[in-house]
Image 1 (cartoon, helix red, strand yellow):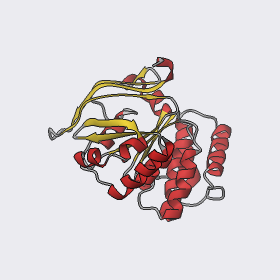
Image 2: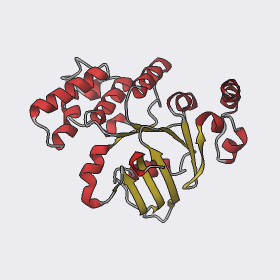
Image 3: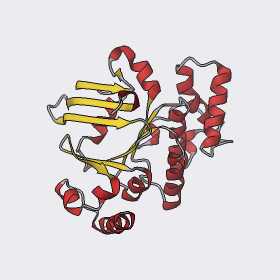
Length: 253
């Protein structure tokens, strides 16, 4: 695999929390530029811990390279421009008085001029269907609108990698579908942490299962979601959805 096309390279990554709980136990992973990856696993499997290493929020032993740049304390500013994480709870990313200020926060910290910041904010809000929300308080919006604003706070920095932690959680079906269409439109490397199997199948051609801090499976999304035995072995069971995936896989083969 050409190293120039590798967005994320992880080698022998280990991490234990201060209480001694081992969260990651020797992760090795390569993700190509513009790949769409679904990351699944039961609670405590290590998914959130892994994604928090991608832009240096957590730091374990081993190496992580983002477009061949090693993640370390000396280059966290550049790494965080490159890797944007959208957290499950939008409240974790919305802390300014207005939507405009929330979305402008990242570009300003990148040192952009106010004219460029204004351009970025308006373009990003337009792309997410949020034009007219500039002066509103994010805390008075619906949950789905907050989700979109939280995505805007990351998208405004034009990251080459976007990580979404449970993006469709707590949304009604219409809002879920609208958000999936929005995510599909982003031209970048995407990692989707999810328990929403229809979303994983629609958004991602590759799927990774984590279990007990290791990668338990890595392959084509429909192939893995069709394998009920594999899913059950890793504390996951989507039997009804497995049947659907088997039918779809058979139609594609």
